[in-house]
Length: 291
Image (cartoon, rainbow, N blue to C red; front, top):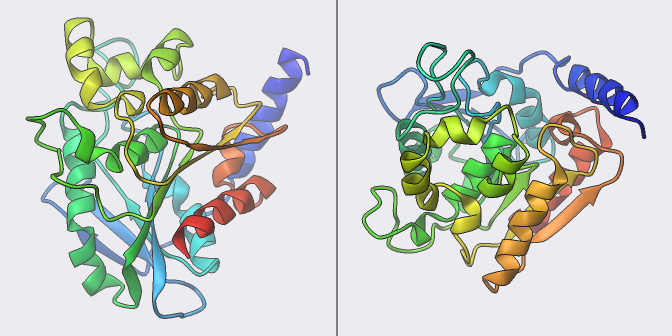
C-alpha cells in the first residue's frame, strides 16, 4: 500500500472511531479531589451478577485535550458484551505550550502515575458501591495507545524499583492486561518519534528522562508474572507495530511470554471502534483472561 493510501485509510478509520456519540455512565465516583480523579462505571447490559471487571485507560498521548469521553462507546461496547466496566480518568499534560514546546505537553510527572496508582488502589471499594453486582476478584486492565502503556504499568507496580511510591509489595490481583497498540517500549517509541515526541515530554529531557524511565517504561518492568496480551494493527501509523514487537521481545528476553495479535490491514483506532471487526477481537482477548 502506498503512503498516501495508508494515510487515507487511517483518516477513514479515525473518523469512524470518533463518530460515535459519547455514552453516559451508569455511575461515577471520585478517587481523589482533583476533577480528573474520577472513574465512570458501566454495568453489564444483560444485568448479570458476578460480571468480570474491565478497567479502561484511555489514550491520547497523555495530553490534556484527550479525555475519557472518546472511549465511552468502547466502554459501552464491552458492557454490552457482559462486562462491568470502569473507565478511568487521570491527570494529563498541561496545554500551556510555553512550558515545553509549541503544542500540548504529554503527561505530568508524577501526577499521571499518581492517579493511575490511586485509581487502581481505590477500585475495589468504589466497585462495591457503584457496581455491587461486579466480581472484583476478576479484573482485567486494558488501555489504548498511551493508555496501553498505563495498563501495562498498572500491572507491573510490584516490579517497580525499590523506593518508588507506586510500588506494590505483591503483584496486583489482576486476571491480566490487554494492551491495545500500546506505547510499550520507550526506546523504540523515541526512535520512531511516536506522537511527536510524547515520551520525551512525559518523562522530561536528558537527565530526567534517564532517571524516570525505569519507573515508567513497560519494557523495563519485566517480567511481571501477570498474563499479558497485546493487540496491534499492522498498518498503525500512530504507534507502529515495531513498538509492540520490541516490548514482546523484551518480555521474551526476561523469560516471559506475551501474546501478540497482529491484525492485518488495521490501523490505530479500529481497536476501540465498536463498528470495527478489530474491536470484537479485542473483546475476545479480554474475555479469554476474564472468564
